[in-house]
Length: 194
Length: 302
Image (cartoon, rainbow over all chains, first blue to last red; front, top):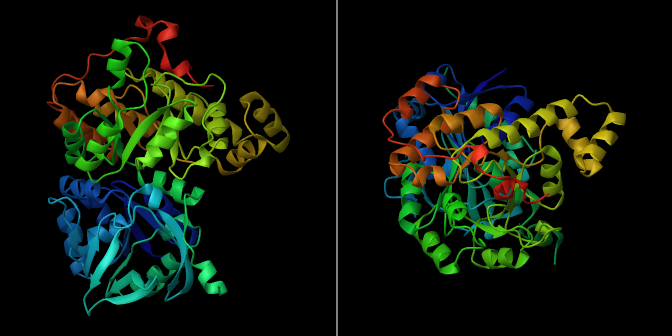
C-alpha cells in the first residue's frame, strides 16, 4: 500500500529523507505550512539545526497543528534534530527552544561534541545491524518506562519508540540503506488508526 | 579482538560524516559575524551556522591590505556565545591556517577568496583534514576541481561585500546550467566535457549520470534581501551564506530573521512579500562597473 509521508522541510536534510521514502515506492511531500499536513499517513522530522527549526515551526504556524496531529496518533519519525524536537526535555538547548513532548526521553544537544568529533559506526537495532552516522549528535540521556529502546550504540539508546513516535540520534537517510524508513512505514505508520 | 569489536570502532572525518554535515545545513542561512554579540543576533534569528571573521567582506574591500585568518581569541569567543555550528575562513592554499582552525574545533573551514590568497597554484589538500571544507566556485569545472581536492560543500563565489547578487546568479546559472547540459551528453561527449572543464573524468561522469554535484551547492556573495535569498534558492542553490548583507543593513536582527524565513519559504511569494516589509534600508551595495578587475575576489582561485 502506498503511504503519503510528509517530510518537515523547514530546514535540514529533508531531501535525503524524501529520496528514501520514494525509493520504497511511497510518496513524499515537503511540509512547510499547515496546509501541507492534510491527508498525511506519517511525518518525518529531519536532521538540521533544532533551534532553527524550532523558530520556523512557530513562525510558520506549524507547531500547534503538528503537536495535535501527533497526539491524535500521526506516525512520526524524528532523526537527530528531529529527535530533539520530539523529546520531552532538552538539555543544553536554547532556553526558548520548543519541543513537542511526544516521546518521554531527555536529550542533550550536541552531546558528542563538535563536527570534528562526528562519527559513523555500526549499531545494533531491532531490524539487525545498521550503520549509523552521528553528526554533532544528541545523546538520549534518559528514557521513561513507556519508551522502547530499539537500537543501541556502546550500550546507550540511539533508536527509541513510544507508540506512534520513533526517534533516532543518528542519520539513517545518509547511508543509502532505507531499512529503517521501511520499518517506520511498515510498523509505525500502518499501526495508526484509520 | 573479535570481529564484532572491530566492526564497532567508530570512524571520524569520513567523507560521509563530512558531506553529511553539509546536508544538515540545507535550507538554512549561514551568517557572517564579527563579534559574539552579532553571533547571538544571528542565532536568535534562526541561522544554521555563523561564519566567524574579523571584518565582513564589505570592510575588507574598503580597508584593502592583506586579509588573513581571524584571531583565535575572537573565534573562541564566538564559539562560546552560540550553540549552532561555527565556521571560519582560511586563505586559499594556507593549510596551516586550516590546521589552526581545526585545532580550535571550528565546525567547517571556508577556503575563501575573500581573504588574500596564500598560494598562487595550489589549493589546500582537504582530504588531509577531519574538519570539512567549503570552497567557492564560479563554474562547474572549478566546483569539480575543489571536490577532487576534498571539498564537502561548494558555494558560488558571487562578488562578496558588494550587496549585489548579479555575480552569484551568474555563477549559479553557469554551474547548474552546465550540469543540465552535461547530463544530456553521451559517453563520448563526456570525455570532451572533462577536457573543457579541466576536471577529473570520473567526477564529470558521475555528474552526467546523477544530474547533480557530489556535494551540496550553496549560494554566497551579494545576498542583501529576502528576495535575493529566495532567488538563489529558486535557481537551485540549497542554502545561502549572507556576509555583509545583514550587519551592514539598518536593522540586522529583523533582516536576518526575514532572510531565514525567505530561504525556507522560497517558492511562496505571499510569505516573501510578508517578510520583506518594513526591514529598513539594506546595505547600499556596489555596481559591478564600479569595481575594477583587480578588486574582484571571484577571480582569485582557479
